[in-house]
Image (cartoon, rainbow, N blue to C red; front, side, top):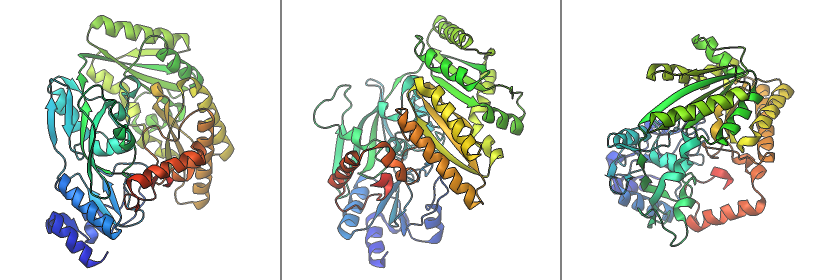
Amino acid sequence: MEAKHLDELGAIVGKENLFSDKAHTIAYSYDATRERFEPDAVIFPRDEEDVSRILRYCNEHGIIIVPRGAGSGFTGGALPAKGGVVLALEKHMNKILEIDMDNMVAVVQPGVINMELQKAVEAKGLFYPPDPASQEYSTIGGNVSENAGGMRAAKYGITKDYVMAIRAVRPNGDIIRAGKKTIKDVAGYNIAGILIASEGTLAVITEITLKLIAKPKLKKTAMGIFPSVDSAMEAVYKTMAGGVTPVAMEFLDNLTIRAVEQKYSKGLPTEAGAILITDVDGNLPEEIEYQMDTIERIFMQNGCMEFKKARNDAEAADLWFARRNASQSITIYGSKKINEDITVPRSVLPELLRQINDVANKYKVKVPCFGHTGDGNVHTNVMVDGSDPKQLEIGHKAIEEIFRITVDLGGTLSGEHGIGLSKAPFMHLAFTEEEMNLFRDLKHAFDPNNILNPGKMAL
């Protein structure tokens, strides 16, 4: 980037908030994908007005801008793949502006950490349910931009279900407001809905109004051990159709069980075909017991070999240990994990897992699976030797085949991680050319000069 542009941008935010040294450009060159693309500079805007002035200048001079939160994404959505400037929102724009008890909403800046918001509202007896695995460090702005999910999605939904309003800055510098604090709002186009999951390609989000709910008083955890994946998957969708909606319904297959046991020696049943871990919540003990009894009955009707109920928080944490440590455990099967977050209708989960097993056998690779089966979201992990180009090629062929299977079963390429760079080559599997052209038209309407996070989602 020319020095004059750095000087002009530095004049907007102050030189203490603009960096082009290697320490900063390298630090902001990667995310959880571990792919690296070095930006020309990193800018830390102080407020919405800074964002507006930065975008206006960059739009006029054709300078690429890539918004970024914590950099915790798994698909490269915040990577400066085409160079330009990283707009880092986590340093200054990280405040909870309001917790409105009367209307049960929170107003936050994009750099607020998910867990910090949860703690702040729970201290007031309220609840913000979306809980991505990265909740201890991912930002609300990033969660909105990727439409993040989490383990509680089976009952409570995902980020989009809690966004009531958004303030954002278009690439030309215009500040817009989409949505209101009101529960009902049918005036005008649903611009907030368009900005959710747009991965920073349409506008830079500067403020978010989120719906809150009352925090349930009671919670209980249980684990079901099954002889096969099929029996566990049958239990999942029959439970959801049986009059009970668990907070979470998490799944581990045999490969994952064996990996966790090998790494941590937790006494897991390595002969089991699958494990389901579930939480229920509510406000009355009778309500909790009814839900848990119903789940136990349906599990046992579908071949559950053992049903364990946690008697206290320590036992609950112990039951959850395997699921929370699944991702790091499966590295025993290969140095490179090609991790995807495919999602299908719950009723076809058994068929999805059967066909994934066929793919694993075809390509002679290990594909441990775990995830949020309460909402049909499976993390499928093709494990290969990352130092072997042939193994990597095989792994990517296996993933493409899994994507095709998912779409054929009525599913989607991503349930929570987004598309970014890594899934962009597969968009044609899920969308027609007419649909892709509509996406491109939307992108052009917001960003005619294509300065905002170009190249993501195949746009």
